[in-house]
Image 1: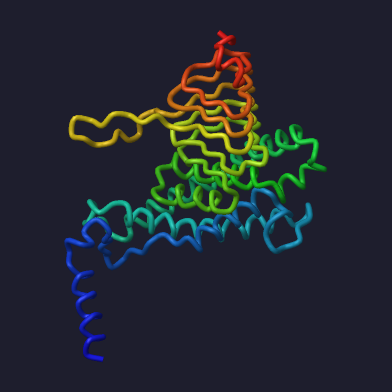
Image 2: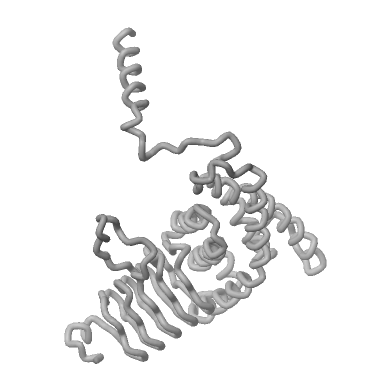
Length: 301
């Protein structure tokens, strides 16, 4: 028993040494809390219920009751989102020790309202994504199947939500929402990626879209596609450059087939087709088809 107590005491002493936890420690102020993954899941589900009425949520909705249910869901969403933005603001800004809880809450409320105001635009984009997915997949029986079953739409919905929050300057929450979709679908879209309308992901498992990727309209990609960032040299202080554009630009009406990797700040021209299992680190002219064969011989130039 004495030896057992000694082991526990020594372990506590080591783990309480500031040198061991300095980079892993988050000091709290009395009024703050960490963002909650569980609450964020609720927030995303409320967004789904609002954006796709009748497909998500617990109420049976008709045209006569959609306004009532949307109003209830909006009120709940706003309340939950405000609390999580508040937590994210507290967690992200340690330099504002003099900021009162009232100031932070006022900012959180304003950001939450701005997000709610953007929901009609998010729905407009998702309408085009659903239609594009349905039009491009002969296996889909109807748009409802796409909304309710397809992992691509699930991941893109999370992305549209996360991207809007990121544009508003909300910290932490966008990445958490993106990683929820990643865990659920195997599709990894950084919330910073800019994606146009009529976007579809077929199957999608293993798809990666990096932070500074720019995707145009009517773009279709398949499983295993990676829009990857090039490795940039460190700055004079030896730090990795952050926020630098280092992912591909994909113009309108491009199709990228499975397991292709596009690397760096390259441009894929309008209407190009990227066949499966190719590695591209250079610009592709508009209307070009890239395959393993013509990559070897550069016959597309």
